[in-house]
Length: 253
Image (cartoon, rainbow, N blue to C red; front, side, top):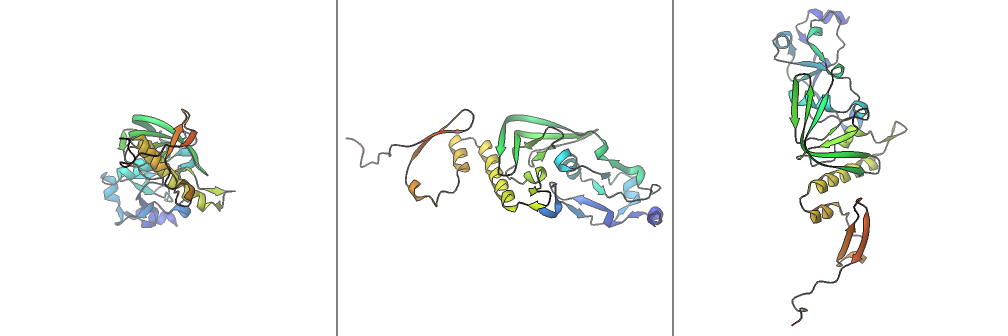
């Protein structure tokens, strides 16, 4: 029956969608990043080049999010290609998963290893990154991107990224494929957000402050001053009680 659509000059809304935000590896768990198009996609709009139709078959965990991010920023329309081989749309479909995707890191500052409860990943901090497929490219400075475990297996963190949601591209947070670890998800997302802020802070003291947990429940620490020593490998080397600061009344004459 699908061949009956061959002579219809517009595409069914159920088979086309737009990307409304950064992709996630499981839409059932993290919410759908696709939305229905507002207006029907017509044959004339496609043939004139007003609308670019694409398909993407990538698995985010293995292939990464780059193709989805490029399509999102370009405003391309995703097609669920259930159409007959003779349908008029076929010559205008661009199958992005069959094309090579490349990423270019722009002004990398450093790399750091995030070790969460569930996700361990290398983050590359940079001013921005560029995604390129064929002659099309886009520069992104406000959204993180996972490159996939079959590619570089890194997370690109541009200068304007402040949240930890990029981990939803990396992992489903599921044990044995279907046992969702919600608490691990929430903690890793929160800690990765702190990790981003700390790695982009200009002041080391401010970075340490942002990484500190909530200590309101540990009264023995309240009111004290500490000297903290961090080893070259990033591990905590030593913590000691600091000498109390002299108040104006205590200053020697």
